[in-house]
Length: 607
Ligand SMILES: Nc1ncnc2c1ncn2[C@@H]1O[C@H](COP(=O)(O)OP(=O)(O)OP(=O)(O)O)[C@@H](O)[C@H]1O
Ligand SMILES: [Mg+2]
Image (cartoon, rainbow, N blue to C red; front, side, top):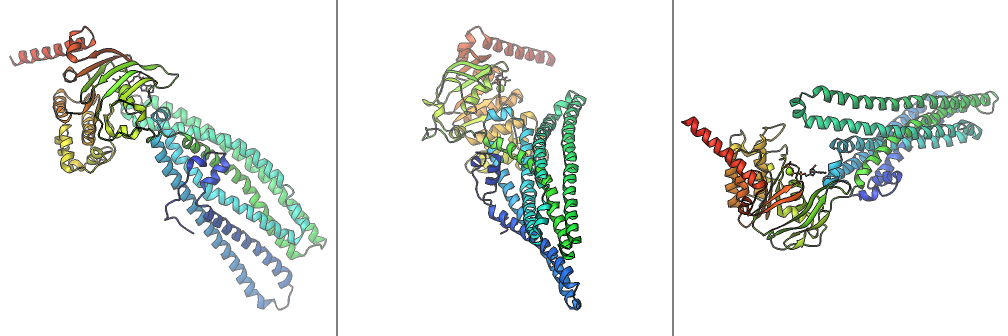
């Protein structure tokens, strides 16, 4: 029954969130229902042991105490009391264990799914969802669900069993006692449900605020350098304090409602208990029931009523699980970016001819158009250099090629086939993109270079890629060479070094189409020249798009595209553009003049 070691049975999570929350919670249990039923059965046995305890009291008082030869029976009675106590303990233990096993299984499956799912959501979703929000849902909300199954679900079972068993037990003593014991029960229910509604809303607000707080924290830690550089600690502190205070207020309101709830239910439950005792006592005095019956009744009544008090608490706690379920379901409902959807499957390695045919693009329908009517034809194996001022849409243009976003109008053709026909995965396997902001994982340099390479590579190949990216010599200066850890626990690389590691990663991937988005912007001119030479050797037969600003790089391209506010300002071969008046000519003049001046100054200094 305790199958913790077995892998969790698979579950269709889209189905889980397809209907309401109750159905969803029930479906989450799938695969663990039997275990969960056993846990509840054990709870039932524990409740029954407790009830039997009071029956034993009844027997002891009415039948044993009154007998002359009770001395012989006493040890047996004592043993029976002990046995029942042990039984209750054992079953309580088992139920807790089984419920915990089921809850852990559910949690691990849910968390694994969420992790995978979040990675597959589109860029558009990640653009608008703060990371802190996602972290909050995957950790805190999933944990609330675990508690829901491990504690509250089983607690509800316990209350139900205690109530049923004890009610039946009192019924056998006296139906009149039984009915007068549950007179106020509907009131307890009504009060609990009413509070459930309130607390559910308050808890939702509380979790929202907590997510906001973790977003502030996460952003602040990620941007700690900026905060320090601008001496904005005070400002950030105040911003955090503000959100933290709001969280405090919402938490206080939640607690306040809890605090109001308990005394109210306590009063109702206490009144019910007193009334029960009163009815029982009058019946005992009138001789309608025996003293033993009365004593047993008092015990049974306590165990009938006490759970009712907890029922309210439980309902309220369950509301938290239900809210957390909704928050998690919201992520699950998001559509994944289909990686395999697409009808065209290219056979041989792609030749790599790229045509933009009147392509326009906006990040969202209501947002400004970022690319206007882009037209160019890049024959297979040639180099296109893109340049233009910041924010002119260069990165956006190349991101379209990997289908990170889908273009709004026009057509992009890859080897004569519309890009939409290609499965995203195929595109991303064939196109190597060195992103503008290099990102390295906190793993070894080797793992970072090998990342995403889907074939086995030899040590020599990896070193060749690192050499081409002009990073090999740097890596050798680290204590553990390629096995040096990057990031918080290891070496901290400079911006240019990071760029070169990501370059090596892409070289090793050996893609048919290479895209370098400002990939050498943080690298000095000399190193850039070295990389450029290596690139030219690596690139024959490879279609390449380079986003760059240095004239030397632009001059080596077959075509240059100058973007200005999302429009094509200039397009042609570098020599053609040099002959036209325009920004390319200005850039060329400016950069050569600077170089001449520097050379003249150096010459003068040397004398
Ligand atoms: N994820 C996004 N959602 C909405 N708008 C965006 C997004 N990314 C970029 N933009 C907008 O699109 C425009 C073009 O941005 P893009 O990153 O393509 O510029 P760029 O030419 O690469 O600039 P840079 O040289 O600074 O890298 C900018 O106005 C920017 O605000
Ligand atoms: Mg950019």
